[in-house]
Every structure is written in structure tokens, then in C-alpha cells.
Length: 425
Image (tube, rainbow, N blue to C red; front, side):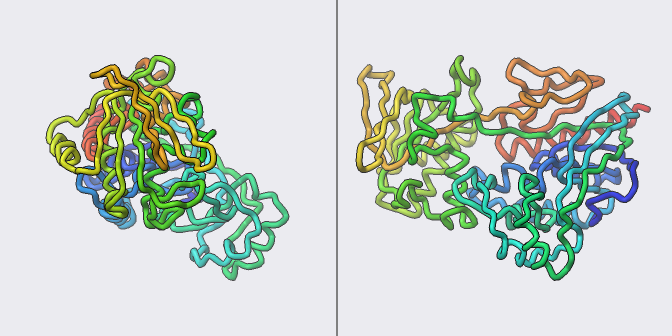
């Protein structure tokens, strides 16, 4: 459905899905394709979530365009799906079969006449940290979220909507698509069931004092590594270190960065070991002579994914070091890094000098910071506990750490649970 800004103040559907990442999109598609109406609500300017910011899926190692394009097409052509972006849930009342949801639609400052020609961004004088690239580069204050954005429409960072310099963008638009006076709007949705698929965020690596993130230029996180390796990323797919754009010859992957640690994340995020091995393939493909050094407590590669681990062990340039990195320091002058870890098998202290270090930070559910409504029960880590009768239905990484494939499967199950719940009345 092309109408992203409802004209009416009240809308209806069978299911409301909160969160427009891969879990939310899957739930919305599956709901609509069995003949039910669904509202897909996303708080950012575009659908796609964390998956669309990745370089390759695991374990097939294909780009996110493989599945995302198909899903976006299924959403575009299905009249039973209504997409609301820049939307926040303010209040939910009622119960299964009869929910009333108050939703705030925040201003985009760019209307439906936008053709994404880019003239506004070309004249824009204001730059901001590019959050899609995790701050590795800058973009303009008026921007297209990414190349697969849906809606495919520019948006203005609200921090700069009142800046007088934005008037140049208004003047440059031949389609009268920029409205700096756009206001927030509140609407009500009447739905029978609610699926909460708000996804995850990477653990804040600045809290891990001993690993140097935010202190040393060449310490990055695993999500940043995905953007470095992506062709539409800040370096057009070149894996280079931030300090001087030097190509990688020796790189360290630091597992359990803050994870399985009572001072940070007590749990294992399940996907980090394999994600780091996947990212190592990016380096080896681009720089065949580069060395990979992975420091770990124990490698977790369940089921059929063990084959990928075995394959990496056969790579003569891939070195596995048992031991959690306790400290990272910078080499004066070169900005290389020294990784220090104790080998838990031999008791020896390993000191390894590398060009760049990638911290495998864990997955934190967004529900930990923004709990869902209706007294939906959460576990000790902030994940939704499945099975609540009156609360929302959790989907994907809102209930536990999952890879993309498992997230899609879980979202399909959430679809069925929502349909069953909605049919009770």
C-alpha cells in the first residue's frame, strides 16, 4: 500500500506488527498472504532493520538484497499490508481480540511527491554522523536511509529541520516535496493481536574499558565490520582500518567482547563466533595474504554450522587462539594494536600485534530499554518471555538471540500465534 501517512485518524487491521526488521516484515507478509489485514509499524524512516545493514547472510554468504528485495516486493504488491514508518506506540489498551493502540507518526519533512532525485542532498550544507554506517562516515542532514529504503523517499534529521540552512534544500526541490513545517500526528489503530518484533542493538563497547573501543581508532565492532565490507558502505567494500585507510594485513577478532561476563552481558549471543568467521572470509577474499587471528573462550557452531568452522580451521592463514582477550593497547606511532590473552589450555600469555581489532559484541534486545506494554513479562536479560496470554507476542530477537534464518522461522510461528489469538473473539 503506497499510502504511508494515513488521512484518517483511526485505522483497523487484524494484526499490528511493531518493528520493521526481518522478523516484523516476515510476520506482516505471512499475515497478509493468508488473507488478513496487517499494520507494520517501524520507528525509523525505513524498513529493513539490522539485516539490510549487513554485508552477507550466514551461512550462504549472499548479500541481503537476495531475500530483502523479494520481501519488499511482497509488501508493495499486497493491499492488506499497511506500512507506517517514523511511528511510535504511545499507549495500548484492551485485550486479545480488541486492542486500541495510540500511535504517533513523527514528521519526515519530505512528502509523497519526493522522487529521490537527490538534488536536495547535493545542495545541503549540513553533515551528520551516518548512523546506517555506525558513524564510520558522514551523510547530509537530508538523506536517503539506504539504497533499499522503503519508502524510497528522503528524510530530514529532525535535529536540523529548524536550521535556516535547510531552506536551500527546499529551493532545490523541483517537486515541492520538502515541508519543514510538517508536524507529528496521532492516530488510533484497532487490532485483534499485537506482535512485538523490535529487534536488537549491539552492546555498547565503550563500556568495556579494557578493550579500547572509542579510545583507539582501529578498534571497531562486528557490526561496523559488516559496513566496512559492504559495497554500499563507507569504503565501498574495502576492509581498511579507520585511522589511515590502510589495507588489512593482520587482523584480530576478539570474541565474547563483554559477553558471558557478569559485569556486562552474562549470556552468550549464540551467533558471534560464526559471524566473526564469516567476516574473516571478507578479509581473506580481498587480501589473500592477510592473517586472521581469532581469540575465543570456546567456539560455538551448533548443528550443520559446524562444517563452516571446520572449513575455517583448514585455512593456513586463519589462526585460532584459545583465551579471552583481557587487554588491548595501541603501539605508539603505527597505531597498531597489541592483543593480550591468557591461553586457557597452556596458561601462557599471548601478545599479538595486529593492524585492526574487531570486537564481537553481543546482542541486546531493544525490549531491555523499551519494555513492551501490557505488562508483558521479560526475562532477566530483557527478552520477551513467550506464552503471555494478555501481553504482546514476541518475535525474532525480541525473545532470544537468533541468526537470520532462525528469526524468519520464529516470525512465522508468531504469525500463527497472533492469528489464533485474534480469532478467539
